[in-house]
Image (cartoon, rainbow, N blue to C red; front, side):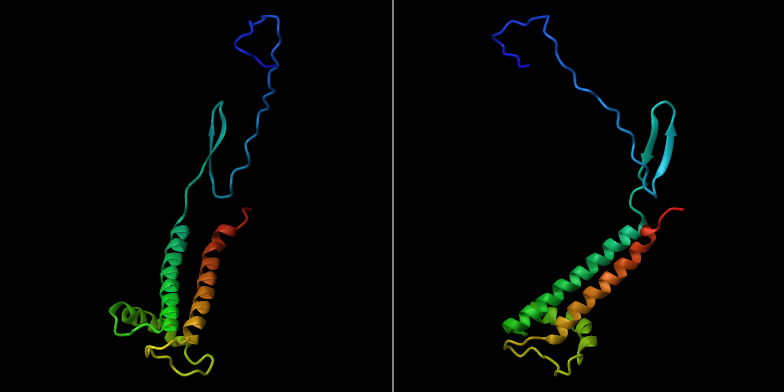
Length: 150
C-alpha cells in the first residue's frame, strides 16, 4: 500500500507488519573470551591480535623493503644506471650482501655495474629465494593460530 500526501488517511486501512525473526548468536571463535551476562545472553569479547600477529607484520615489512631494493637493483642494472650516482651506488651496496649468497647458482660471472645494460641473474634468483623464505617464515608463525580447540 502506498500513501500519497494529497489523499486523506483512512483509519480503517490495515497496514501489514514485517515479521521480525530473532537471530541466534554464532558460536564464539576458538580464541575468544566468553562473558556471560545475566538476562541479556552471552556476549563474546575479542581478545585482539596476539604477539605473533605483530611479528608477522614486522617480518612482512622488512622483507617488503628488501624486495623493493632488489627490484630497484635489477631495474637499475637493466637500464645501465651510472654507479657514480650516490643513490644508485647506495642501492648496489645495500643489496650486495643479500645477492652474494646466490652468486654462482647458474655458473655465471659476477655482475659489476659498468654503465651498460646487464641482467643480474643472481639478483633475480635472490628475489625468488627471499620470497620463498618469507612465505616459509610467515607460515611457521601462523601455525599456533591454526590449532583446532579440543
